[in-house]
Image (cartoon, rainbow, N blue to C red):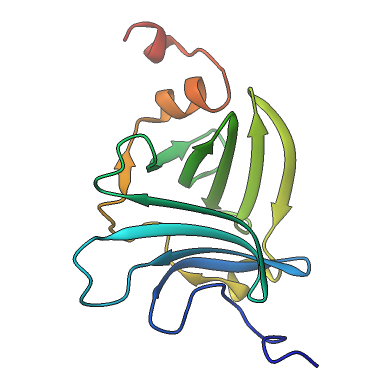
Length: 158
């Protein structure tokens, strides 16, 4: 059995776990810089600890390579959403109040996949509401227009 078989995160032992959960046989993680490092970063890692399939790093200084966060309020649910854009693909981590967290992959407003975290909240480490200078807050209307391509009354007035 591999040494990392029971791993719940793709973060290194000296990094902070901003968010992490198992999705099928893979793990999605947002890892923070080691304590004491001056350049605060947040790095998305998807895969297994032995084979990371996708990495994306955002820092305070990386204006075009940042993470974004919005509070999404709907008729039947609310929650926190953190996302980034890699080329034309949006990677969206959703943490709803009702139901478990999940990862969505969206290209040009079309959902390509929706991958739920195993064991819902019981399998999650970290907190998408935690503070990080690598995350820029956005409005719900901005999320709808930039990620989903949906025009709402409030983002048409901007």
